[in-house]
Length: 305
Image 1 (cartoon, rainbow, N blue to C red):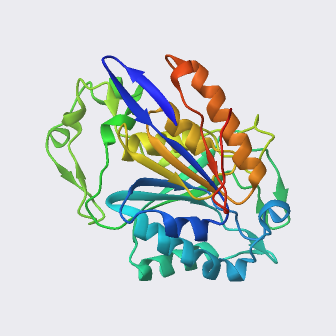
Image 2: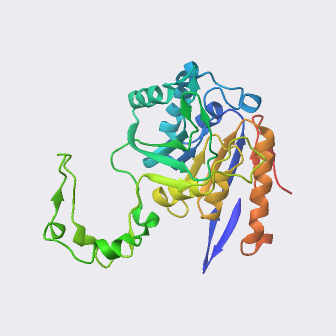
Image 3: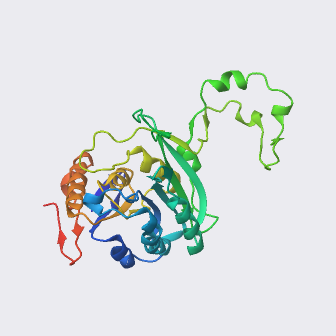
């Protein structure tokens, strides 16, 4: 638990860590209690030394009981953000991600959006029939069509293109110009005159995490940070059921969101506990902050002190 002092009031920001199987711990969480789920589960046939490795042809069957519980604990206004990527099997892409999307829709999930994480610092390379991956999927799921979304929080600078493009507007630019392909979408260019920020696209240009040697597949802090900005406000609850090195919890704590992390590896739970405790020294009045606890399957709670 961390006490964060802001102005004249103190907000009680909690970071809870559960060590064990997500399928077991998620059943213990309250229904409709989580505002945002951000996670990157083990990909098919990967992380065999730490998580056992799930065969690609068994991945959907393995994940559906987890997504069922995630659907239960997520608030009606909440969002589930899933970072995942297909693997290549015998020279072709496996279809397990697409199969998972279809099965989750049968569970009751709405597949609202798909973001692309472009890895800016991906190493070059090639195989006989393909090139090296430089992107990953980030899938957005919701329980209902109306959910909390704070789009202004992730606006980006307009860019230099706006100075020339918006300088001399045509008559078409001053009205809503419908799409020429019949999609129903349209634009009014004049709405962007004198604006210095615009809404981003669904492509996120982020570097991979290169300085974290404690976990086999740590994603960058900017990834959960962007979605925490977009889908939550201060004091909301963020869940990562495959916590790993704890990036989501660290970012949520820094952004004054409550958080819950679950991981089967005790060393990762202990590492995140230490990192969260160290981060408290950057907060006002760190001596008043009680320790972050790790709850183990047997119910034993271990503090940082």
